[in-house]
Image (cartoon, rainbow, N blue to C red):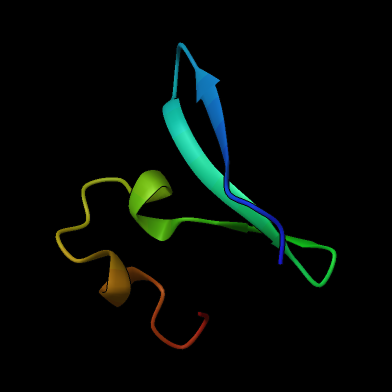
Length: 46
């Protein structure tokens, strides 16, 4: 697992990510729009 990286974009804001087994993983809380509980948005896929 790599260290956390933060991508900043003027249109989208900040998104945290890291690499796990050569695959990019993004923090659901940073990319979920209008979701009260980010854990609910990725049930079954996280």
